[in-house]
Image (cartoon, rainbow, N blue to C red; front, side):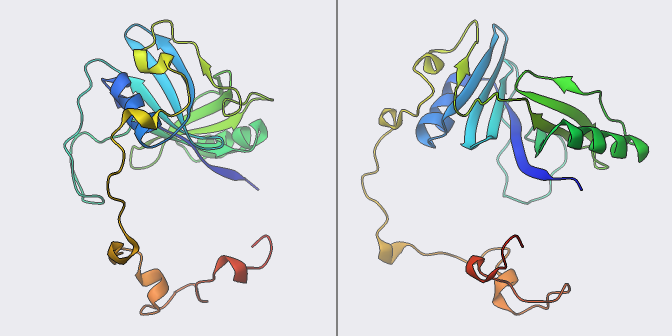
Length: 211
């Protein structure tokens, strides 16, 4: 049985790593887990949660994509480089690689990235995907590293967020103004539509252990 461990990392691209660090680390509060590269190429990891990361490549000529409404179909260039799904171990990676290969899809050799082992492929829609398993006791969450030979100034300040560099909140939204508007997914809990798999939505405290 394959055991997926969530999304290991999402890989994006930027032409301004300095501002990217300011936004993801300092404004949103994501700890930097790693930074590596050289002049003309960088790869930085921001921690979403333990062992879950947002990754940015710095490519000097990349351009931001035009903003669009979430979920609205587009044609042409898309916004992310690839998505990596975390696996429990190398055994799961080899099992998955054999399955993908047997199904007739291209799949890469196993690649050693030092802190993870990975295989690469494409889904039927052409979406580039990666599957990654941790390596031994390597833990970037517990021991962040910066080995970029030409780091940007913001990276040299350290891996911890610097929220003091952004304007403080002057007026927190008071409870009486915290309106929550309905969006897609409300129908999952409204009871207006039949669950074709049967059953009703459960709260966490109602679930059986290990369900």
